[in-house]
Image (tube, rainbow, N blue to C red; front, side, top):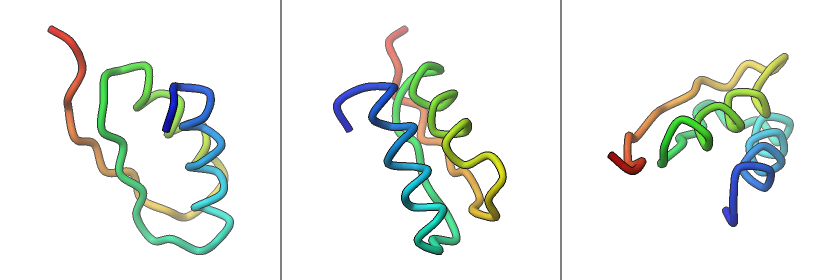
Length: 53
């Protein structure tokens, strides 16, 4: 995705389309937005740390 706001929308779409797992690759901003997109759904969140250090 293009950024944190887009990541939230993509995650929400994936959750409503029935995906079992959604993985977030990035830093805390991306992970936070993906987690917000998944709220209320049943999809699990996978995290691949790749943010800046």
